[in-house]
Length: 558
Image (cartoon, rainbow, N blue to C red; front, side, top):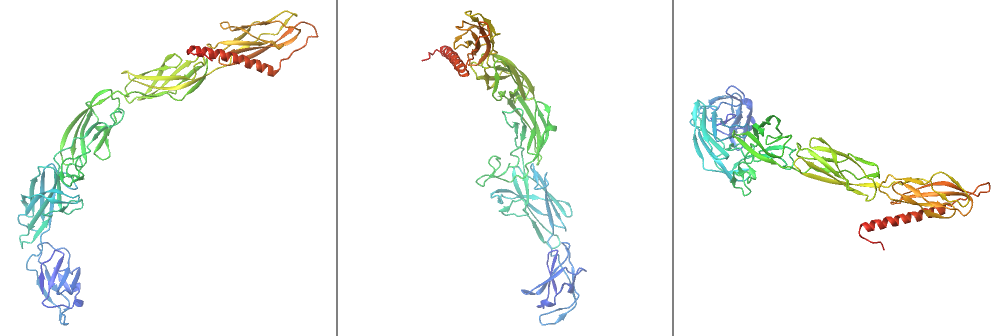
């Protein structure tokens, strides 16, 4: 029985003749005082038994005892036997670590410490470092290796230092032999291509020599009320492969990044020399935001001191300019009002991204009048209120233009329409009258009124005897004069119609009694006749109005 070299969890026992595999059991053996965990016999190697054992020290020389019967192929039994491993047949276990500044794949600004720890005495380890070259996203070739000497710091620990001068991904390969039998263990690989994925068994580290310049300024240059950003957008792509698979340290060209450390820490931040560090927010430690308030028009300076995962620390400063923006005005919906009544509106609003700006507002009412609106400011927005009386509907609808001007004389405008409704005039025909036969009936005079103070008027008097006349208008005194002599006695309904130049009219009546006595007949005017008279009167007024309008426009009606 002989014992062959093995790993620290497996022992091969060789016999001098073929065995009957059915007679071999784990309980037939004792390894260093313990029963094996399992046993295996293979028909392709009939003289050997493979024992699975608890992990042994790398320099162990265990004693193997046969404690029960096994048989050879002819059935001859063997029940006892003892043998010890004469030499160390197990390679040392090596633990290689690269000391950087990150917990995942190590990263450093240049200097790394490579530590090799063995579980038994080993000689001087051989350590080499290769920079990873161009290839694919998951595998890569290696540059010419650099040999690094390891210094022994205790019987089973060695340290080697290496300084990478250029940014990129680096590979570590280490070998060591135990001092008892020169069993050699290797960690990593020394030929490419190698696996560079995150689950690789290869010993990799990164050299990051710079902190990329961030974007500093307003996220939207046209919105000074929005976020100020500090964006280290290239920090996770400082080295890797470009679109052609070639190694690159240009972040704008890297399409496959070997840079696994994108985060940063901001140590200090100020806007116009005012500390804003406490108000910076971030969800990924790449993009930081600050919401300023009261950014005035002009230049502003943001200063940031930051450090990346490798330890690169730099200060950055950027000046950006807030331009004055036009106020945005929303005049609101169209409105309607009666002539002579006050139009009061508070529907108009505005916004101005230059929040510190102050504002004034002017309303052009569209009828030749303008007035100053009241501004109610709240932060970057505000509302306006104003009132106006349209004395007449002539020219309706009117376009009302609202102009908001900031304190640096930049204006924004918007408009809405106002429809002015004509109101009918009022008329008072006067009291009933009685006259002798042959005596004319004269209006007292009749009076009229109209809130449309610019309206002009006409009048028609229907005397109730089948005749009608135009009344004489005194526009200033708002009176209607007319007289009529009746050809016969009777009681006549006199109708006075006042008509404005927009077609609105009013009607009032009184009774004219001509003659005396009980035999005076009463005369009534038919409704149809009255409507015809009113229609004729309106037609006359509208024709007058049309002539006035066309004359004002330099035209003649045909």
